[in-house]
Structures are given as C-alpha cells and as structure tokens.
Image (tube, rainbow, N blue to C red):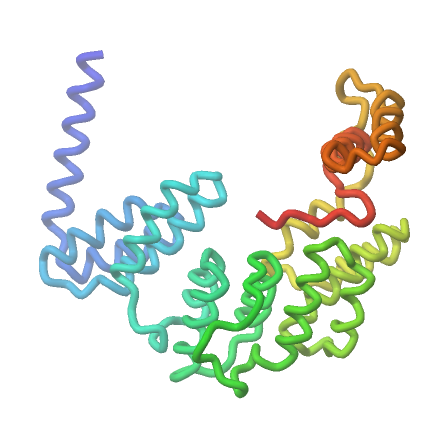
Amino acid sequence: MAGKKKKGKKGRRKGSEELKSLSPEQMMEKGRELIASGKLRDAVSMLKAAGKQGAEVKGLLFQAYLERETQLRAKGMDEDARGVRLQALSNMPEPRELSENELYTFAQNSPFEEGINLYANYLKGNPRSDRTETLIAGLALLHSPGKLPGGIGDDFPLARDSQEVFRAIRLMNDGLWEDALEPLSSIPRSSPYASIRLFCNAMVSFYREDDRGMRRALSMIPEFSPLMPLVERLSRPVPDLPCLWDGPLNTEDLRAELMDIIENNNHRGMKKAVADFAGAVFPEISRRGAAISWS
C-alpha cells in the first residue's frame, strides 16, 4: 500500500509539473479538449489554472459547468447539480452572446419563467431557435405556470396561442384530456406548442385503449422536447410495465371496500379508497379521469 501511495504522489507531482510547463493558451486548448471528451471536472481544474495566469476563461468555464450539471442530473445527483449550476451562473455570458447549444442546455434545466426570459434576451442578438422554443413550450406543460411571465410582449414567438395552451394545461391537470383537445385544436404543426397537442392526443388515445393512435401521436413529438421521458414511459410495451400482481394483493377486497364507502356516502374515505384501488390495479398509470402529477 505504501508503494502505491508513493506512486500516486509521484503521478500528482508529474502532473503538476506538466501543468506549469503549459502556457495559458495551451491550458485553454487542453480545457476545450477535456470538455469535448466529457472530462468536465478535469476541464474545470485546467481552466481555473489558466484563469490564474490571466487567461479569459469565463466562457469556457460556463460551458464546462453547464455540461457537468447535465451530467449530474442524468445520474440523479440533483443536489450536486444545483451547486454546479450556481457556478455556471457566476460565469455566464450575456444571453445574446450564448451559442444556440448553450442556450438550449441552460434552458433545459431551468424553470419555465427563467427559460423564457433567457430566450427573450437571447433573441435581442440572435435568430429564433426552433428546438429551444419547443423545449420551453414543453416546460409550460411540466411546470404549469398558468401564463407567460410579465414583460413578454405579444410579438414574442411563444405568445401566439399561449392563452389556449394554458387553458388546455389546466384541463389536463384536472384529468380532462378530451376537453383539453378543444382549445388545442387550432394549434398548427409548426407551433412550438404542437408537442403539447400531440401529447394530449396520445393521452386521449390511451384512455380510449387506442394503442395505435397513441403511439402515432407520441412518435411525432421531437426528441428534444422535455416531454420525452413521459413519451418513453408511455411507449413501453405493456409487459414491461410493473404488473398488478408483483406482490400480495386482493383487488376484490379493495373493490368491496370502495363500493361500501360509496353506498354509505362517506366522501372523506372515498378519495383514499379510489387512489388505493387505482394504484392496485395499475400502479404506474392514473386511471380515466385522474390527473397526472408532473412533479
């Protein structure tokens, strides 16, 4: 063990010596290479070293922290990701100076209002980004803000159709999927909100037990939409979903209890009984009329 520790110290000393031999420009180039290869922690260390020697590294540090945040969220390490996001914010350039990829990546992990304000500022110096608009439109469904944030004018790309969309989202959150189709009927395929209409169509088809219609609607949702985790879940073949008899279960007893509560007008106990029965019959899917939780 002692030999290994000694070798480790030598390796660190050698790496430190190599770092000292690099110019700030070489460190920045090395940082770019590390970002491209996904070695983001090493990239941050390299770029910080370049910054100490006077190099302007804020833009590259922002990129490294941004991609590190996405990396951590993919691993379910949300608390660590939030800390890295703060580092990204401290190195963030002006929104109009962002690349389209940086804009999309940052908005991907943003609340709806933050994402839409960022995009509004980005547009002051850049052309529209279709995939970012689709992303932010999907965040409206997931976060249910109810309206566009203040200060967003009628000429903003996502302002068109927004009232109809937010009305439909309220209906969807109440489980009224077929009713939600009505305000969405005027949404064209070219709209950033088209994914919401497609998702609503898919849910209506699901409750009608129209698997073909559901899959057709889901297949038309762009892969860069934030609805994709829901799309992938619904697209799984039924045998892959958790089965109702994974554990000991007697649905007949639950059904009898539910009917007894209904017959005796015990409204206080009804909500729990309905939830228990629905969860027992199919744990992963809310039954007809039940609202989906987006959290």
